Length: 267
Image (cartoon, rainbow, N blue to C red; front, side, top):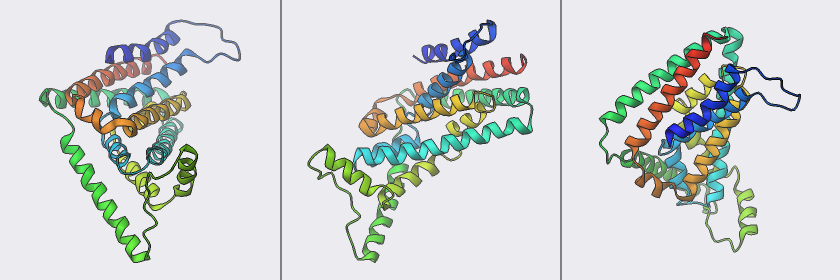
């Protein structure tokens, strides 16, 4: 599966550099599609079973799924956009060939670390340890919310799924946006993603002229993973093999690293 994803991401990128075609004004260069596909694939493998994935999965068991999805997806979208712009600013300071080469080296380092981690894992390794850590963080956050409610003399901040229909659920959702629960989920996901491998990878991938497509692919990947998390992420997290995911990610980062280094010498 990983090989298929990597091949789909690689194919348009390679074809754009090995063939010369004349595009009409409505055509989008194949390299743009390659950047988009690479970002989606990278996020897809990096985020499944990750901390932010588990936060969304566990919070969706306590609050409305749509509420959790909007808070987590918006948080990750903002982080992805900021990371993309940060990566693109490096191009104005450092020649693009250098930033592409450095990005390739970074991906090779990630591949090596993930390979070592994956080989050291047992075949039955899961996400129990990280899930326990996330549950503790959620428990602390919930306790703080309850303390705020007590100090405010009101218990109306609690959100329930007692809505009688989808229309009422949407109304309740909009009434709860920027509520303490929504903000709490937003901040937990934002801080959980800060400094994560996927964020650093988006910064590295956005150092070329396709940064808008990298951002779009990153946002798409995050939205897909967040949707999976809120619909049944906890069950999925207990079923997947973290060893397989880790080794698959290592292969993907290895391919990306080779690609970036190759293109660094062909500008």
